[in-house]
Length: 460
Image 1 (cartoon, rainbow, N blue to C red):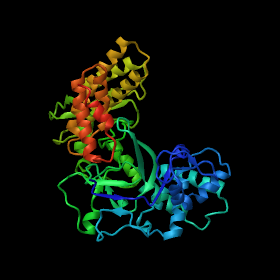
Image 2: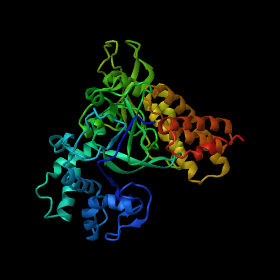
Image 3: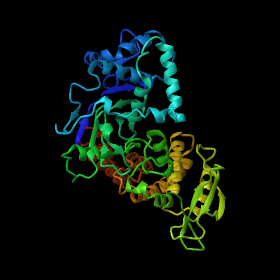
Image 4: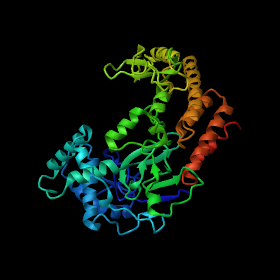
C-alpha cells in the first residue's frame, strides 16, 4: 500500500481532453455541460462537485472563445474561486494516512517566485501569454487580484496528473493539479518517495520499504520526491530515467533550485558517466570525455577533466564532429546506424551519452516496425536489430538505475513484444514477468493486470 495519499486542491484538464474526460475526476465521459456544451462530466455528483469552479469557465466557453490552450488561465480561475471559499486553508483534510501531528500546508505556504519569473525568459513569455488571455476574455475582471503571484505558485508547484488506460502504453498525462502538502517535498534524483498515482489522487510510497513514517514535521518536510518523468511514462525524450547535466540545468531554469542528491553533487563523476570515451589521456592515463561545444552544435571536444591533476586539464586534445539524428524514419535508418557505429568507436560502453543515442534508435526502430511499410524479411531484420539494441539497454538500465528505484517498465514490455513477435516466448515471458513485478510493487491491486496475465501465459 502507498504510504500516504493526498487529494488535489485544484486541478484542470488540458484543453484537448475537455470534451472526452470528466473535469472533476478525469475519467472518460461524454455527458456535456448543458450551458457551455464543452465541459463533460461522469455523472451528476461530479457535475455538482465541480459546479462552483466551472462557473467562470462555463461563461468563457459560452462566449465562443477561439480554440487555444487555456490550461494555466483556467487553473488560475479555479484557484481564485477556491481562495474565495476557504482562503487557501481547506476545510477538509486532503491527506490520508498522515498523522494529525504533521502540519498540513495551505495556499499561502507555496512560493510564487515572482522575482525569478520576471527575469526568466521562458516563464515570462508564459506569463505574458496568460495575461493577454485574461485581458482578452475578462477585460474588466480580476483587476484587484495579484495574478502573477497565483501564476507563479501554479507553474512551480503543479504536478502532472496521469491516467492509465493500458499498462503497455503507460500513463497519459491529461492535466495538472496542485497538492498543497506534497508540494513541500523538494526534488531529488534519488528520492525518498516514489509516485504511485493512477488517477487524480497523489499517492506516494517510500523507495525504501524498511523506512518508517516520520514522527516530526522537520523529518516529514525533509523527504524528497522526483519531479522528473517516472517509470510508467513512455520514453519520449532520451534519458528520462537518469539525471544529466542538461536536465539539472533545466531544473534550475524552471524550478529555481539545484538538486542536492549525492549523484548531482558530484558533478565531476556525473560528467564522466555521461560522456566517457574509450580513449585515455597520454599524460595521466585517465579516460577522456567528450564535452559538447557551446559554439557549434555538431562539435564535441575530447578533453581530460583532470581528476588526477593532469597538465592537460582545460586543453582541447581533439575536436570531433558527430551528427546526432533527432528524427529517424525509414529513409534515414542506414544513416542512423552509421552514426551509431561512429559513436560506439569513440564512447565507452558504460557512457550515458551512448545509452541516450541507443534509446533513440530503439524507439525509432519500433516506430518503423509499427508503420507496416516493410515486407516480412525487412521487418524481421528490423526486429532483430531492435532486440540487439534492447539487450544493450537492458544491461545499461540495470547498471545505471540500480540506486534510483526508478525503472523503465514500458521499455520491458516493448522489448518483450518484439521477442513475442518472432516467437521467442521464453525471453518474452521473462521480461513480462519482470515488468509485472515492478508494476505490482508500485501499484499493488489498484490496476487491472489482465493483459499482463494473458501475456504471462504465452508459453502455454
